[in-house]
Amino acid sequence: MNLGTLKTACAAHGLFVMGHLSDDENTLVLIGADAGFWDAFTQNAEFKDGMKNPIDRYSKRVIEGMADGAVTHFPSDGPPYDPFIAWALKSGRFWQSPTGMMVHDTAGLMISIRGAIRLPQTIAASHAPKTSPCDSCETRPCVTACPVGALNAVSFYDVPKCKAYLDTPAGGDCMDRGCMARCACPVSQTFNRPDAQSAFHMKAFNPNK
Image (tube, rainbow, N blue to C red; front, top):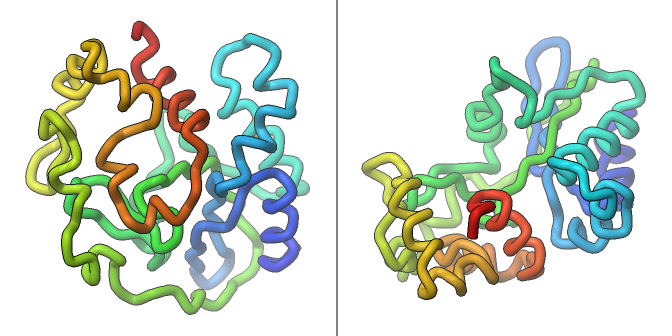
């Protein structure tokens, strides 16, 4: 399997290659949810069977099938958990945004890394942008978009504050459309992730709402 073949295989399942990093012996390919992920996922048994962790199960089945015996890694496996954030930042296509969350050159803040495949070959670095898209973003709307200031670059994500807001009537828009900071990112807005997918993730994040 080469990178081009893998990219084609990913597209059939609403996935795409978000980046890769190589050493002297192999290449770790990071695979994430593309704009077509929701349409692909909702047509499959994992979405319909009512069992727990449907997106994780779908991702594992599909990515392991594409790997064809190659070593796979998944963010949901652990503890111990694989260092997906470190891998992403080393790929040259992810950066830390002003919110503290990672930003991707084409997905913006709508990042959903579903897994990784370790190919037994070295692949040259992609011709990805060398600087974060945030560097050329003049207004940085993500910084002020969170209504309770739960996200910033100088302190940890305030999960209790976020969830407390989501539990109020005012938090309904975030629950239905997704995190306002993610949605405010200009790059995220070009990625065209459906509101239904964002709502699904928000329900998993705050299941009691």
